[in-house]
Length: 316
Image 1 (spheres, rainbow, N blue to C red):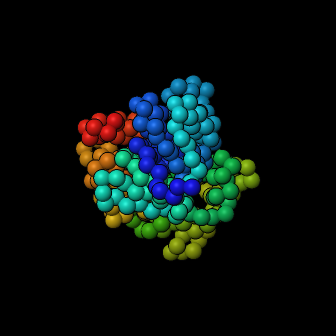
Image 2: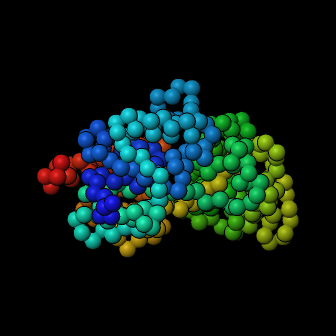
Image 3: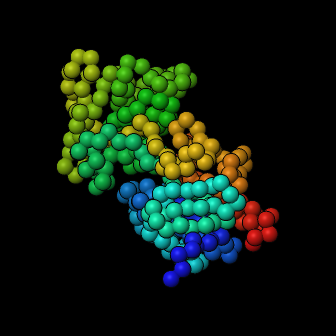
């Protein structure tokens, strides 16, 4: 049996909307893509109950079902979808070396990185339990705020994104409690002013979540003031976390240019990274929009960039 590394034209790392969209376009361009699903097959959307804002689904779709649809479409065009987790890369030469599960070596002419990012959570047992059953704990106001129209919600966070999500929720909800762990915002002055000028946002400084109440749905949030130790229960039906995301890019450090948070940098108006033949799509590079549809769009872009790269080299 041969032990020589497998050689592929297009290797896709990650199986969210970016990865599968890249696969669909790459397969239709006859690049014969090989996609490795990674540690969370289907990506973040598999942890989302209802997706109502993805075009083409007038009645909405559950996150897992939407990802299964994308996977089936990629498979229809003969994408090889494989279980496995990329654990090491070597981007020194024109042929990119990748190791899967620390043992299988693959050589690729092009690599599309679509490893995504994961939301940060508080780690409280009831928070995680209610999140996992779709019980009113979420990390995306733009995705899920619609479901909380006319209700009181709690948002945790202090940065620009948290302020933006709080003001977004305030357009839908009569009351938004915004919990800031320290005595001041981390957001820019402009974003702070937006919150301060929104009358139905109540900011609670020096405040942390102690527990989340409710059996099947969020019914309240127990908070504690870190200065006075006073506990309060806020009656609310939704808890939104806006405390940041962690891009799944650790294995590419030292190879790819990244910002201080680990998001992969790419050239303007393209998905090209600093390594020729290596492209990035989706939330591994996007700290601004973080939507399924924008991830899918960048996956399309990455596949087109990979096809053109190979064509210019005469490899396709």
